Length: 144
Image (cartoon, rainbow, N blue to C red; front, side):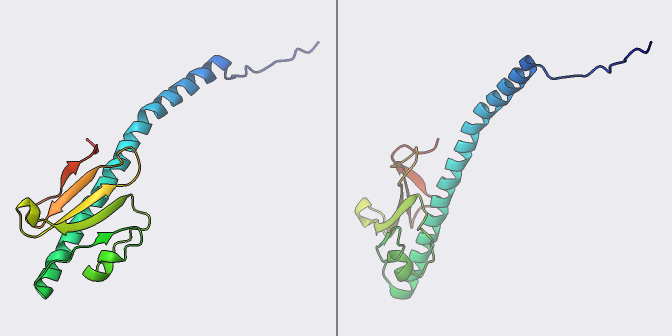
C-alpha cells in the first residue's frame, strides 16, 4: 500500500496578521504628525520667500520712482504684481500679503505682512520691513 506524503505548508495565522496590522498602524500614527509639521514649515518658508521678494521689489520700485508703493496681494494677485512687476502666483496660496507704510512704527520704508488664511495656524502673521534682515512672527499662532 502506498502512503501519501504531504509537504508541510507554512501558513500565516490570524494572530500574526493582527500583530502586523497593529505595527503598521502604530508606525503610521507616528509618521502622520511629523509629515504634517514638515508641510506647515514649508508653507511658512513659502511666505517668508514671498515677503523677501515683495520687499526686494519695493526697494527696486523706490530706486526707480523715489517712493514706495502700498498694495495688496490677494488671490487675484493683480495689485502688487502689476505695480511692482512681480509674478507671484497666489491663486493657490494659503497666505494673504499686504504692504503698508512702516513710518508709523518709527521705521522709514515699507512693511510687508503675510497672514495665513487657512489650516491649523490660520491667523498667523509674518512681517518684514525694509530695514529688517529677516521676516519675523508678528501675531497669531504660528508653527513652533
